[in-house]
Image (cartoon, rainbow, N blue to C red):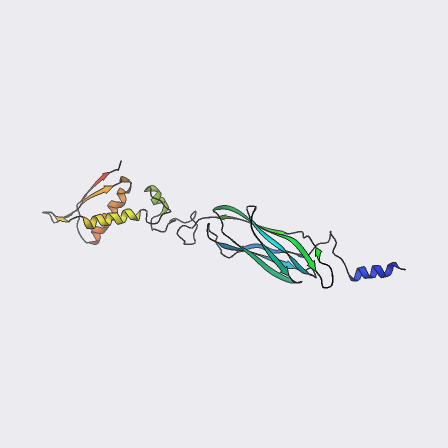
Length: 234
């Protein structure tokens, strides 16, 4: 007979056992403050944690990138709540594995001792490739056809042996050509043609110079007869 009151008390005040499933953990994995993430640009990483344990929850969430710790945040969630936590992260170029882990989780019921708990799903993971965005147009370099946004495609810059990541690296040559055109004296020959004597240094940009000079003279509505002398610097 003495066992009945004890059994009744246990039923009225159930304890969470080691094998019992705890209804708490991450909700819907990770997400970010930006739709597209670029290298060397700070972004915020978010997680949401639910607490449906019939007690108040405290603990820690630690964020990692490629198993290297980014930082740790303290969390508190009242019974029946979903709370968010976040960390700022400045990613590097390449493959990145972002992970958030819950630890030091404790349940607190009014008038009872705080209890340490473990949960089945204590981690959220996301794998992303982070690209550079050299020209800041929100298109990664691997997709962008003009990485430096200087109106000269990467393919053309590679063909011209100029740097597709440096804006105006080829347009510098264009500006030089225009300046050369401006500085050279115009000579009107007996046939009424405008003749310019132009020397182009560094033969790799010769096609660019020819096109630019032709276009500039066409804008002036002038007929043109000029000779392009090409030579390479030693």
